[in-house]
Image 1: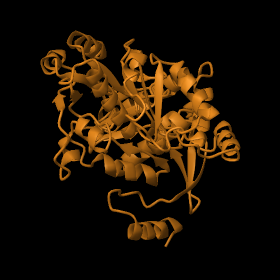
Image 2: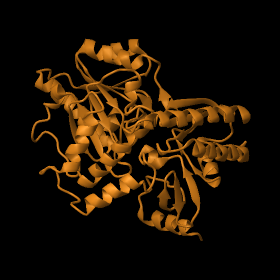
Image 3: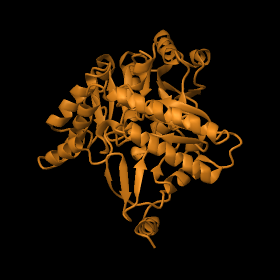
Image 4: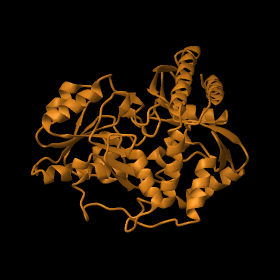
Length: 403
């Protein structure tokens, strides 16, 4: 029995069965590569599900974390700490927002976004303006408010009743949205790209239409950038591709390069509703996580970094398109921006995305799924052109074993 198999057996005995991890126990990483406890090397095109933005053991990140943990590891929000203030200033400096709230995860960031949207309406005197509109195929988190905003019934099954006040509409249809957004709508929440829902992109101009519909109805616009934010799509935030400014934005994943951290940012006019006692978190301004976030921001804002993300992403998308042709329609659509990429399996392909992920792992590359028929690539943002080509070659070999 390998060491990874031993850990898999031990994990099965003590972990809840809500996850089904691959029988691989990762031990260390270096750049875009990870190594398991048996010494096998893998090219990491998952990055902890779009989290390890700087890859593994990045010198700036490890230095920042080590220095901070040697100073103070936790303060709570009862006191200030320098890394949290500095990171908040950096994030605000790259987007539309005036104010920020730190939390621990994307689900919590969305919970805060929903709460501040409803509270802002309440403070304006619109006490019936409580409804939140989201889109079919969306994913906003697993806690109850975020789960209710997730317009995929499969995630609700067995956990009802869901919290009230949520409406769902098909994405990409401004007329349908305009019918649902009313004087009772507090906010519309939208992912610029529906990552978990299959790496689904909206038609050009749809985000602008959402903004106009919200303005016309007096509703707020929330963008969920939990997976698309912090350079993932070749811009600091994905909504910036469309030149649209929301009122509220939820963030997490790549924000701290692997440490747990989330944030909700908003305009001051909205944020003023979260007065003392209305919302809180114990770990949200954690100085170690915020120090990591400062290191991440330092790299992301270097001249040319995001352009490199865009270029490497284009290489991967072009290569996957070519592989789809070479392997008789293995992929019928390749979607995404930057290094958020989904390759949809053709209707005649006799295996699902999970089987392809397993075949890729056997070829030394880690990939992920976005639904049963979509292969998802969300590699570290430091991925090079050469490593992208190496990954494509491994996927090519994997397809050859399955087709």
